[in-house]
Image (tube, rainbow, N blue to C red):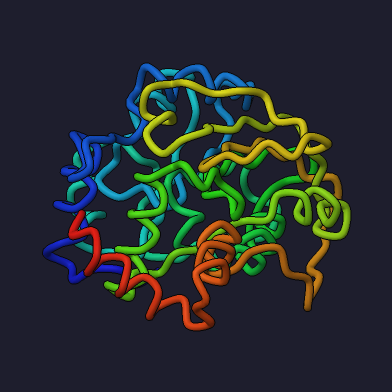
Length: 266
């Protein structure tokens, strides 16, 4: 999860929250509120804001009466988060946190899992959650629409900048959840890049083959399990790989370079 220099990490997210270079933005409080309701947070519960950055989620969680911990990979971000009222702030990655087993009632990883080794992260979330606790996380789906121009450009640019990008095969994840000690509570899809920030979503039905760019899941821990060797995510989308193969490229990075040179878009 080491993405930026310490000086650039907080600034990147503040800019991204306001508006990305392509005109999209991340979900604000008005969108986040409705999804946080799915966690059914009770007053006094221990909640981990995983990847808390400068504390953007804290006011929404504190308003529900939760005791909120925060963890992030960047110490500089945590310095800003200290202005909020977190119970405790710690340096830690989603794949390895400093907390005891069965400690939290809720864990939230908002805008985090698309840069995480997700299989390791899911095992760690299972470890630190109490049985019956809920885990909310967002990510990018590996199969989005070939017509999602902004989604494709974002993936292309991330690859060319060596930005860690992880795409989730939700069908595989759904089948593997019992082996990770979780059950599916709710899932939502956002069809095109930018829809999440606008609050435009649909309820996921993985029996349908509808492509979509981003997702939000709510899972519940059923038991403590730590499987190894199971995979459900990768560094590239199936969409980009299919486009490259269709154009005769075996090397996805080379395909992205040619595409950028030909189109000149950012």
